Image (cartoon, rainbow, N blue to C red; front, side, top):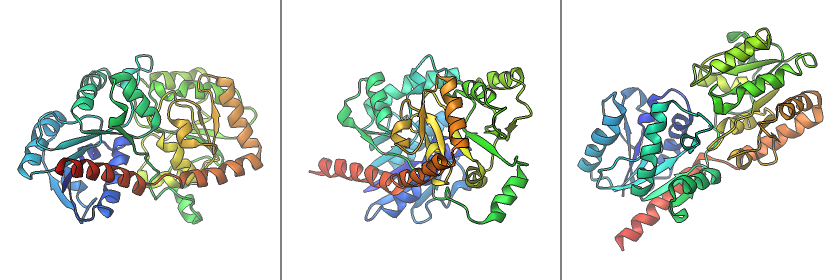
Length: 370
């Protein structure tokens, strides 16, 4: 069987879809067996992700033209049997079975204001159509599966949950020179807590800032924010100024992915008070790196965190502050969270994710051959 994988979203330098493709494709390649894997990119710079597979570059900067015209033409030309589309939407006109990976349904929650207007309109229009046209849907959490059913009325039997995992480079680092170099590179303070992710409204950073402000006199830690320019992030910068936190906040902007494991290792706590997640990958990245976690008790996050993090109501600023202070001042609790987090992260793997996806594709292919 010829199985195709659309990897165009690697051209988006960060985010869930980028990480999903970067980690899943090698895992798929390792389990492809007698089938053939075709991986399609829109730039030569991504070649080598699956060196033992058929890697094909289709040039094109316009994502709509690439997704809906150029790629389907190539799928037809190569007589592809099944194609996986890892960013919510499938093209309409192909001669192969289509499989959509849906990461979250935040586009449909009007209160979240999660994404820019054009992206929201695009996804609200095309996700329901894609759900109908796809042979199977892969949801990255049970909560995302529930939301797909809620917003599209999709048959639950058409949705398979395939959990993500932290990339293997996220781990405890024993080489002090590596940690020292990253600390110097970013001019990091001696003690800090960290948030990783965008600064968009659904990430709930304004409440995190208020919680942090309420305990700054009790702790020596700075708060590190790693995020480049985000959707509707002006409220974050405004709040930092209003609370006079500029001397306690370190804004790193975009951080090179290769430095992220060291940042998690250096942080004394990772805080992730998001209002909505399709999965919550940074929670696992922190745990796998030996960093204790305080995070939300909403949407998919409890599935990911299990009992290995302190779960808080993200709408309760006092609860966020209390959890941060408790972890930073209770060394036994902190070590317990580290130990539990390392164990929790082991429950997830990209090989498991790849196996679930391939087994479903093979099962459907075999049924169609009968």
